[in-house]
Amino acid sequence: MHIAIVAGEYPPRWGGIGSVVYHLAHHFVDIGHEVSIITRKHSSAIPTQEGVKVIQVPWTPLPMAFTRSYGRNAKRALVKLHQKSPIDVIHAHLPLVSWTRREYRFLQSNIAPVVSSLHGSWLGEREGIRRAAKAKESAIWRNPNDTAIWLTAKWYARYERAGILESAMCVANSQSTKREFEHWYRPAPTFSCEVVLWGCDHLFFRPPNIDHEEEQQRHETIREFYKCGDEDALSYLPTTQTPMLLAVGRLVARKGYMTLLRAMPEILREHPHAVLVIVGRGHMKTSLQKEAKKLGIESSINIQSSLSFQDLAQHFRSADLVIYPSYYEGQGLIPLESLASGTPVVTVDQPPLTEMIDTSVGGLFEMGNPDDLARIVCSTLSNHERGIQAQKGRQRILENYTYEHNAEAFEKIFEKVISSS
Image (cartoon, rainbow, N blue to C red):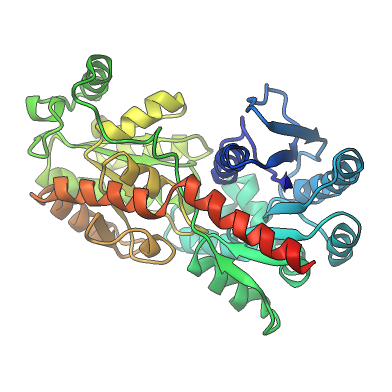
């Protein structure tokens, strides 16, 4: 079948949607399908994949407003593409594309059925920003994107509602996201929505290979760079006295980095040689550095704005623990990449994170509570079964969370909606 994917993110935009679409397209081709991706135009080169056609369209570079301009141009591109190579199914990734109910009807009447993937909602994002602001992570007005979401989420929610009312099928990326859409939008009893949790690249994100000399050298270089390279750490032993804590994600308020910094003094009392490495870009870098200095922990904090994918994967392998203190996620891919790398995860005791993480593969703490976060981090670091947690985490990925699983699941969904159209 010819699958047309409409995705507002695609490499070099490596957000959650961008990563998912990039890998999913490759696996669709592997199982014999033709794939075309319609995404936003980018000044940098788009990576090529054999069998995947990428069509770039113009968009208005304004927070939130881009979803509408991109949506209109994506619709025009779908019409032209269909004339050249008939499309069997349209796979739209919400909320980064905004179509009206009329536009959904046009696409399904004139081109192909639309399957809409729900990656979380604008109203959910707004709620996450509210929680983060209440916890004094950062003022809403400091980030133009947060301000735009706060002020316009209700307006743009109408396009999400159009998606759940008019799509041939919706697919939520977690049970939490499905419940969220049902709560915010009160769809009809006939609302058709399946749940497929996204996977990760288990070949790229993998446990350490201590027999690979170059990889071992990279591990040692990383640990020594952050000054957490005692002999046990260099040998990947959980008995290290210099644990490396890793947090990955955009430097925005709803990711919970201030809560993490406020937990660090207590963590350092029990593990005085621990180091926290934060990897991400965003407007909060200076604020986080100021907070670390205020707390007297700046020597134990290192913020990396940019890493290659190879270096990021090695950081996941080299870390003793990954911490994910987010206030809102549709699903959250970082915990999966950590488990795939053989590294336990500490995250919030809230869905959707609890759909993937439990105490058998890491630890859970009360959202926004730095004292509880510190307690769980310290107990996880002291857990002599951390190696078993790592093994169980990797096995969980292989059994449930791979792009191979995703491609097979969506193939069945596409076949179902095509046969029903």
